[in-house]
View 1 (cartoon, one colour):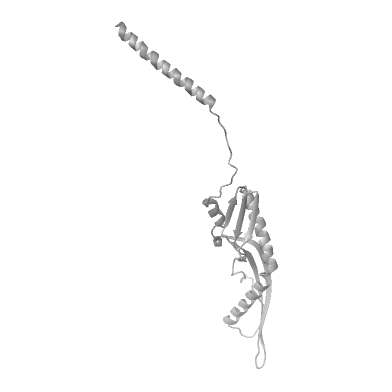
View 2 (cartoon, rainbow, N blue to C red):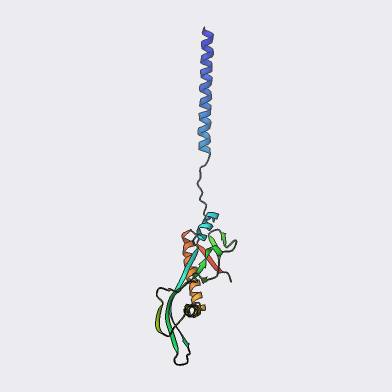
Length: 196
């Protein structure tokens, strides 16, 4: 009976010694290992970020309101017919983010270079037909005549609003807005270029 007790006590001592050795090893390994936290200052441009920027869709940088007086005269035998109408519209200039090329964003550290699509007319239906008024009308005019006058007014508005100066102003506004958005993502240096 005594032998069994001794073996039992020896097994318990052996288990205790093993637990102590494991505890000492664990404490020493924790003390000897250095815990350091490092921060990764690099900004990751993920496909999700690129898609969220593209999801903006059309991005307006300049809106130019215009009114156009357009007239036409039809010569008659006894009298002339006159049609004079006033058209109002807002020409919106900007970019369509869906038209960005592949690799339009390049990132190096905290610097970003962007290649944006060219400034274009965002909405070809810019004339507000509800505000269009006849200023003077004499004689009989067909819907085709009014349609021709409408298209002439549209061409004239585009010629007055889609100028080099307005396109350049839209570019400058676009660069400012894009640069601010990218800086809010953490980029310190943002370079913006435009496709031709």
